[in-house]
Image 1 (cartoon, rainbow, N blue to C red):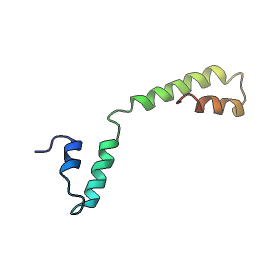
Image 2: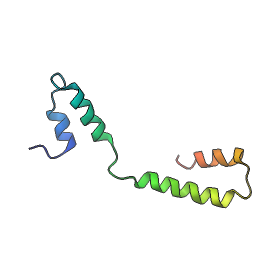
Image 3: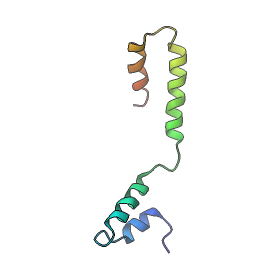
Image 4: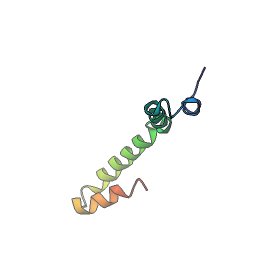
Length: 69
């Protein structure tokens, strides 16, 4: 019995089942949680809230885009 996605990718024959193999590869690369994205959105919200009153939209957008780096 296959218990992990990595094991399923190894056992899947790409010649016989190419579509299933591609789906398994995609599944293996998906993040398990959304914590990183949620942290980024939280940082953006805090930055935007603090800076919004003093910055124009042209200056705020590059600042928000640089947070994820």
